[in-house]
Image (cartoon, rainbow, N blue to C red; front, side, top):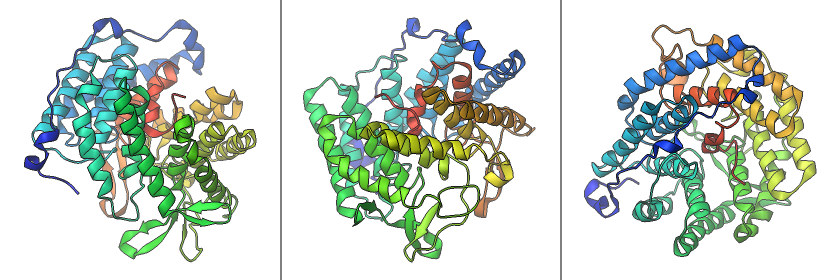
Length: 444
């Protein structure tokens, strides 16, 4: 899949970023302060943010990848948002330094292509920062050569997990979509549309359609040779639903409607299929077996699935589906035992801040009290998790499986950059657009 540096020289560019100071300004206003339970909680959140910023300033070079979720470009996103939020110019300067480092690494042979860790995620970060007015960047001049490299990579996916959002074509597609939305070139817009249409056609070709339902087979546990149908957002069919929903709002992609309906129907058919605190299983095997427990998380569980169905309802203009999605998410707010919910740390992927942020987002979308109370609850839990003397700002991420144990993390997905961004979103609704990197919010 990867190409060596000599093969890829034609794709590589060095670009110097210009960061206009006038665009870096505090966004907190007095009107937003009533978001908090108390002034003391605001003070704690602000202090935690300051700690996180200081740690990232020292530690970012230790992160080897460049992608938006686990790499240094995600740390740059934190830096720019924090500079605007706090009024501290040095964090914008640090963000600029990090983005320059991204291109230095690419020119020195870095060739991981994925959204989570690699080039497509790094380019998404830059385009998002440009879109939100943090940087000035001639994307139409800088990105196309690297786009060609990414397009080549998507053609080489042969594995059944090809569609995976974090590591497969949906993540790269998410980058192509933000460029489709923003490019000022008609030629490039058509090019991105063709690339996205190619991805949709591949999803159509590989879908298993039974009646009104469409599903996609993938590896569930590769080591055990177990295949089936993953319902999660990070690696499964909820990710397909979320991605197709973002395409459907553009008339050029109206053809995805039936495919989206089929995927929604398949997921919905499993609601209530397991007993206990979760409405949906994490996965279903080829033989019809299913997981009997599901965590409360962005990656797996009712929050990620409910959120994806919410976006589908909006895109399809289906009020009944939106109502159903709200009920799914409200049901999930009843899970308040961290151990039962599988929440051991504060990260966005499957930790307290991720759940807090999804519920806060839905509170702002629906004005429902259940979401406000759940967000407040998990905010407090997240603050209580900053107890590790060897952690970053007190936080460490729990690793399960063969690498079981605690370790500090810097990135958005599982580390303090993501924790910090979610704290900023608590303090100011203006500091929320970054969440599109995780398919939580949207720009349509």
